[in-house]
Each structure stands twice: as structure tokens, then as C-alpha cells.
Image 1 (cartoon, rainbow, N blue to C red):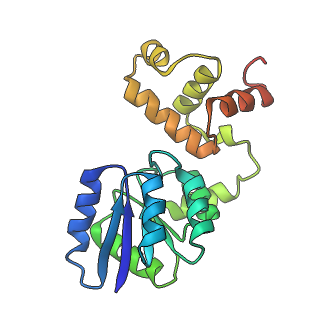
Image 2 (image 1 turned 180 degrees about the horizontal axis):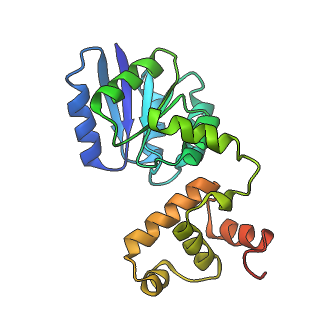
Image 3 (image 1 turned 90 degrees about the vertical axis):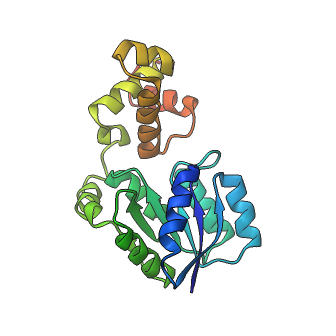
Length: 210
């Protein structure tokens, strides 16, 4: 029996995952969490064999949360289940200590297979990401911002120059949610945590005037 804890900030996603896994006799959900602090508290109290982790959790998130879990529970496998399909994000998650990376558009059969493999001590990478990961590995020496899409880089530079998310949304004729999504994606890709870090990076790489 593989005992897992589901960590995702969307209740409907957690419910859907539990429904899928309830049909699998060798996998049992023993806990769930929508917040990183709550997750860490659960891990301190509940014995499990695997954490099914979303990259975007309120509070500590992404690579930092993976590293924290690895520090506090060094033998606990982490399988990332994320909406992000970029090889760069997957690579950072795996380097931080995740044993597997799967995208949320994967079929339930693939999810169950990934849980079984990672839960038994193996590693798993979404087949759709393998080629991208190899390609990104060959480009490791490039600056992080060079891996951004054109729109992500545009939003990054506008934020670094002092504009707010709502101002950027107005100027680009985008919704605030869309701009916030671009912000989240490039901060994950670049492993940037704060607005201050963002500005410092832009100045250091001469992307804006200091």
C-alpha cells in the first residue's frame, strides 16, 4: 500500500485526485493540504510514502518548498503534479529534490503509474517533457531570463521598471489574472522570490537602468 498526501491549493483538484485514487486498491490518500505550512505540519504528524505536490502553494512554494520537505523528511519521495509544462521548471524541481514531475493534463493511468514508480523508490518524468529537459540541459549556461517567452519577458521588464500588475494589464490589454500568471511563471523559471530580487536581477543584467 502506498500512502500519499495530496498538496494542492485548489480544493476541486484535491477532490478529483482523491476520486481517481479511490479506485486504485494499492494507493491510499492519508492526508491533504491547501497550504504549505499546513502541509509541513501534516508531514510532521502523519506517516506517508509519497507527497503529491503542486508547485504553486500559498506561502512557501515551488523549489523552496521542495527543499524544505527534503530537509525535514529526507527519505520522503516527492512527485510534482503541476500545470507548468516548461522543461526549465521541471528541471529546477528535480534538481531541488523531487523524484518525479508530471503535468496536470496527464491521463489518470499515467498519474497512477507515476505514483507507483516514485512510491517504490523510482523516478518519473512526464514523457512530454523528456526532450525539453534534454534540450534545456544543453542550454544551462544561458542567463535565466533568456529562457522566458516574449510575453513573460515583457511583463518581467515592466514589473522591474516599477509598474504594477494592474497597470501592465491596462497597457497590454490583458486581464490582471493573465498578467499574474505570466509573473508566476517567470518567477518560477528564474527562481526569483521577491520584487526586490527581480529588480536587482534586471539591473545586474543591464535590462533596466539602475
